[in-house]
Image (cartoon, rainbow, N blue to C red; front, side, top):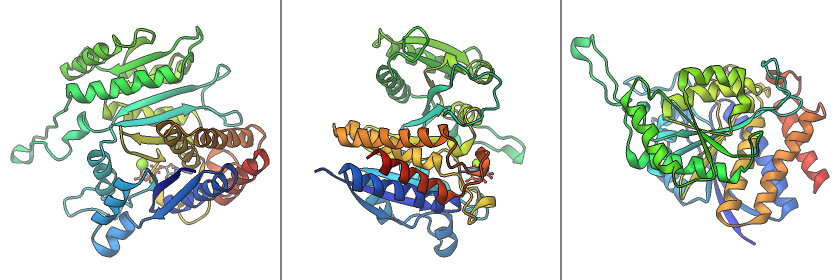
Length: 365
Ligand code: ATP
Ligand code: MG
């Protein structure tokens, strides 16, 4: 039996609460599906920074680097900032993204039966994936900038051929795996940019195309980011895999989560060629922390993504089945009117949801 080392970073705020629920689910998977996990939890985050002046010790980074995968709750608190004003969550998430080259931010956008979407007509469902370039783009500028006499500020967008090739390849390969999501049975990658105005985005599109040429079976589409926000609301069924630069993808993924039940329903993976980290797309939501009311579904679905990624990487069918099993359990609970937290219209607690997923998994084992 394979053994997988998982580094767990519960983090701050609701991060610790939702991580508890995900670990309940992981332990159930371990007991029923025969996979073996060595879990090690680490104290990293804003709380730690406030207590000790250090967000994440070097040793914890090394553990993350040596783990088979990283599972993270959420990190950051408004009051935890460096003297220059930067939030401390970057000490962990940017460090891991950059130094472990987690270049693909993968955000599935899926509407589950039983979740009310604010969109008027969702009879054809919502099911696409946003692939965010995680390392460069406009956010790579955040430590740069120019400020003449305190009255000018600039940022520089960074687009590299290597970076665009890597993220595009990831998107096309994902489309191959998701085969046949469009109404005509085809797979497609949509490039979201602003190629009509900015040369950096024109370059992004050009490199995207050069990669797309190597994937003849996958259709391509191009949408400007402004139009994108409209289509996400008016016609989300037109998407299969969507790829975009760092900041654009950040923005459109918040919008996408609103269409499928909100941040509490938005899982994510930060994935590289060797390493990967899984966490919900939301933050630490300090205003609802400590009350056992946060929605743990995004976290539990991130765990499902982690098992699928590990299963794929190690050609371990048991793990793939475990990852799918968790998602199926969530699907059944929501479709049958089971446990729901307040943000998705129910009155269950955080731990009620975790318990419901555990129960559903036991019943299907
Ligand atoms: P951060 O700065 O870490 O992003 P935040 O206060 O902006 O923290 P987010 O987690 O980004 O909080 O979410 C914004 C709001 O969305 C929260 O204040 C909360 O009301 C809601 N929210 C986010 N995640 C959840 C969740 N898992 N369950 C319930 N509500 C959530
Ligand atoms: Mg936020």
